Image 1 (cartoon, rainbow, N blue to C red):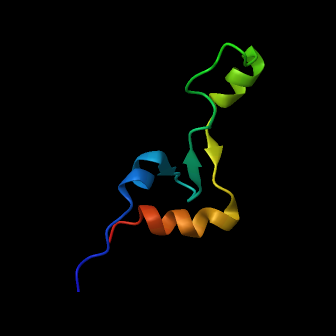
Image 2: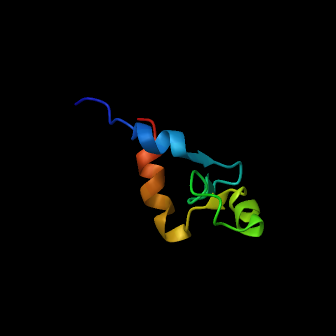
Image 3: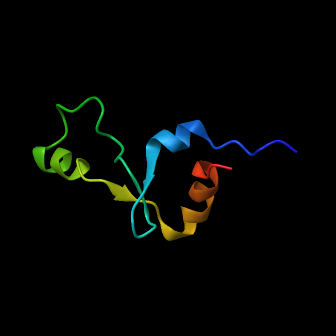
Length: 65
């Protein structure tokens, strides 16, 4: 049976931290920034974390087998 392939798109979008949590870039930061407040754009710079209920699914996508 062939090896399972990881989801290459997910591999580029998620990173696993040393503690095992999964972080991702925030949405709504790429364009149409003029109408967004500076406070909002500043908060979007930070990385977000995947919700614990979704961690297993994301782990399966980025798992290299």
